[in-house]
Image 1 (cartoon, rainbow, N blue to C red):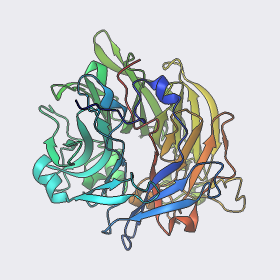
Image 2: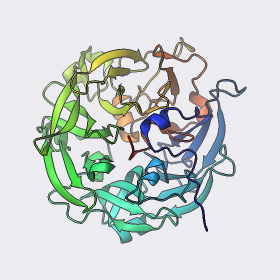
Image 3: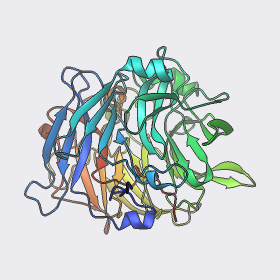
Length: 464
């Protein structure tokens, strides 16, 4: 008789995951904006007692140029323990890495040497297009029955619709397109789910042609970027309901559902309001049998002299916060909100999700502020807290500073550099010993971070 022993990094419940051992490594996507050298996965030592703590200790270059690595993820996670589609034989072993510009997908094996991920499979753009009719893979999530990949564009080119493709858990073959009936959904970006309720939630950014060369002012002021949230029947793969936030709210991006599988709410970050350049955070929730989406946080733009602003913002004489990522701690207590424009990471206590309370703020970089890291006070920083990752136990928060190559160039025309900072969550202060930056990333910019063994935004659970 075969006995399956689940991967020890899989946990049936959020509380069990929160008691997991601390990560010892972080994996970071690094890309070359000029497309002259290959993108890479950098490996960072996160063990405080190590002699190489906070240093780049591994580096895996990919075989091509021009990928622009984006939101990569694990092949499998705690959702493999869900009783509706159990997969006890899979391991959290492979990183699935999408090239947002190239439409390639890479599979990297971390098992034999976690500090030297090994490329074991490449999925060309042609295969993603032929089998799923999608291009521009953006975000990876490990589902209970496969690997889910959001894509911004259709397989035929730079238009839509975008949506979700599924890979096989073990062979990594492209199974096909996830949607059975998408209704009028065209724009795509992030997606997440409530597994125990058979609900998938998706958000909107734009088609490849809308985002490829930076924000298009005509599209922004014409309110053409995404401003809706979609709710799907996860089992039937059909669109059930769409909520329009109002077309002044442009770019409904990151989604973070409650980790508690008995809850049916989650958080959404909105990049900008064209009415006043503010950013906002919303909560989705079920009300009288249907979903509603309610704004709970407004973050205003900050006045600034035109001379201190990039050309795109000079007419407005203000710095928009540009909320480009959010993350929710595994215990559902803290929501982290990155304000990439103003160079701030905000922490909110969302124990009551409808009445968040600000519980901390850190400044780094920023379009005008250029706040330095305390360990290097004489080095003004470009970029700002962008991608946010939280450890499973909630004690550590990691932030990187690049958004998307062409958008970096618009808002930080003198360059964004590359840096990764760590916040100690007990007192919400920057760790002075942890700040890999600059030449440590070999001239590449840094984006998504994943933590060894899992993190707050890579797992979903089916048991309370």
